Image 1 (cartoon, one colour):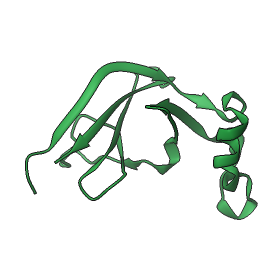
Image 2: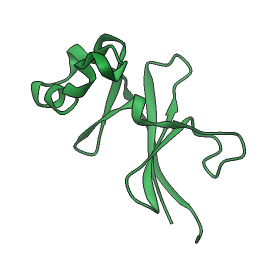
Image 3: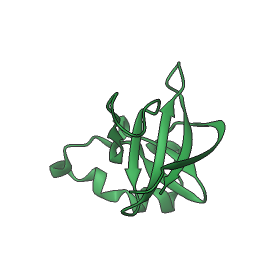
Image 4: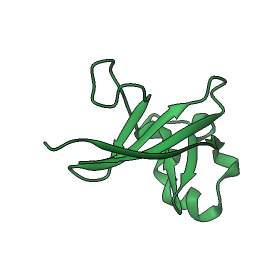
Length: 101
C-alpha cells in the first residue's frame, strides 16, 4: 500500500438527526425504520458532506494503532479511499476528511 493521504479543510459540520433530513435523504435511509435493523431512527445521527448525506452508524471506530490515528471513525468508499470523521469536544459536530492512497 502506498503512502496514505488525508485531505480536510478542518471545518466542523453539524450532526443532524432524522427530522433534520430532507425527504429524499430520509428515503435513502428508509431501511433504518425497519424494526429488524435494530436501529431507532430518532437515535440515528447523520452529517452532510460533498453533496451527500452520511449515516454515522456506518462508520467504523478507529483504534489507537490504526493508520487513521487521531480520527474517531472511517467509512470506506473504495479499496483505497474513504471518509474520516472526528467528533467535536461537545459531540454536536464532526470534522470530515477524505483519505486515499
